[in-house]
Image (cartoon, rainbow, N blue to C red; front, side):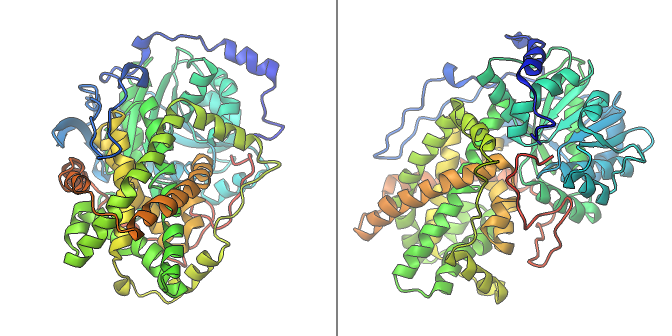
Length: 576
């Protein structure tokens, strides 16, 4: 998005920034409940790395509850913590008219991972609700770019008023969904905010921009709403599950929502309407700050980066132990993306362990016991780098280097070429559950979620950012076509983070966890007890009841292209 034609000059950026008043009063933040305490307001969790015991930070009371004047919100208990959720479904489309009261134009700016999916889902939902004559979905892109032609392929045209130049769409939108890359947002947000009309709503699908603005020391202008709806999955998953759900009253990807600033008094209804229109099976509440911390962190851990590091380290280990290269791939990658993924998705991590025989349980727990603490070490480092703003700065710096140093491919090594052969003759029912692989993977998943809990996140966010997004949205893409098909269909921020942190998990597992197992380290009984009795199992059981009504279908021969998963990946800054 950031070509020379759209870069903001320093003088113009300074003028726009002057309109963003510093130090916006906190009463302008969401009216739907208490904010999470900031990291500066909490005492860092005390934890013993020798025993694995933790003292979990308190989550702000009422942080996950909300009400709506349009939709029926229900309260659920997740491991003893009350949160509010909104169930989705096509039967809710009739309420979109009330939710979007006063909204005539929904502008979607950006055509990366989320833009095509969200634009098409919202357009289809509005049509299904009989609102096509009242509300239009209009795409904002640069004419002449490949993305413009892709939008036309998806049915958005300049002739019918559903496709236009970026800042024309920004200026006329009542609800503006800013879905350009995070790096482009960091460069262009002063100009975007300055162009929005008073009383309109800025919609974000990632809290990244708030982190950038905090680093810059500025706030949003006061006369607009600022909301977030963040699907817990890549854009192609958001679209694919929506299409599959048209016959079963809806299916999609769970989403979090936040109201950061409510100028008109209707920001909550607009945000919830947006989530319903996307097809979210259930929507839970968060804040922009909590979302960007958990999201940027999670994709660097078990969701993307860590799982890449895990399978590469296990593949080498199994080959060194005498497995053939194809068996090593099956017992590392295929075992995780196949049966391990399926069981966790439907029954949870504890059920995976309990389904093993006695020998398998022993092997699982040896791997778990050895891998948990090294994984936790890296997880904590990642979270704290995100929370202090360092990881956001790293992403912005990396995107600014793309013209000179584009992202390289991640599936060209021998291991991933072997994967092509394995998938070509795959028999799903014959893929084994390797208990050592399962133990390492679950240890990392537990370390990912335990860090979030110690840092004060609520259970709905934890379960989605560390488990559900991995098993219901992302792993199926690696199962279909390999690691690049999973990682590189995500945002630039996710792709960069996976490349940066995946090797760190690979290294620490190889140097610490596997060495400990090979040296005969005994199972840490305290870690075992904590795993078997962890609150996450109860919380995940409730969340699993709210999972999509169908499993995502990603065939190895599925067509790719406009608005769908891609097999060719760009690292140029111009992705809108």
